Image (tube, rainbow, N blue to C red; front, side, top):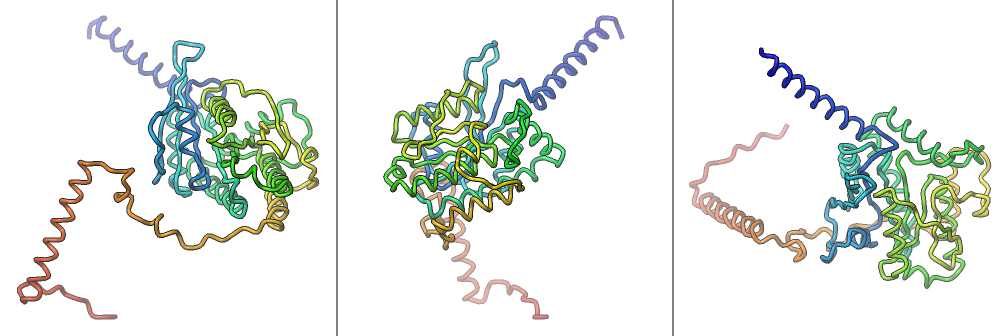
Length: 355
């Protein structure tokens, strides 16, 4: 082999090695990144897609999320490389779909740069806590499906340091969720019409749950210009690493805004003493459901079980035409088979004797 070809081979190997090192660093670096992910779950019909479309400045009308929607946005950063946000919106609350989003986000960057956003319907307080519990259960299951125990422990330890940078002694009340977490209360435009006592009860419960989980808390409405702008700032913070607009609002007569680490049980007016997170969340739940019992989920609405292919929002001319042709062929084949069976010309299908 000549010196030239040997040098070229070495340069190719070096380029491959540097590329692999750069990719590995991008997937594991917890401090520097040009890519982040936001995974959104929560109540049905609360406005998750509308919020995402406003954030990404999409012009088309939002459609209902059947399984999972993926979109992304770019923003010019401080370097020549643009910052990228990956947005995963999960429709049905299933651990498999949520795990797919978590695993997908980990392909491009460290899970330290993934934020889980839970959006709850404030206008349905009789379902709110049940939905929060369901989201947490599914999220924890999806975490175990996506990451091993060591990775989850590393994520949780990192969150503890982020939420307590001065290493101050906690009140013993918080054990943050492994991923960055934000709770968004949707449909505030309807919620604000509730009486003051109910708004205070719901607000205190959500503040307490968010604090126990190391999460931020934001109220939102797609019909309020100021709240839409505030949601954009919040998503830009989690998606591009921009500075979160300074400010805290704990007035229950106004849309709450409580960033991570700026609340405490003392400020909320609660005292749980020393205890594990699960016990604290159970205490908050009892405080909530005592006044607002949660409705059990009945059978799904028949409209929710309809074939999405019949929904005009999901029309695909080519696919629909092929599907119609296939159904027509199947109908003809079944008709021919039935006719042959009636005439005694079809082969008998062996039926096994019962055991």
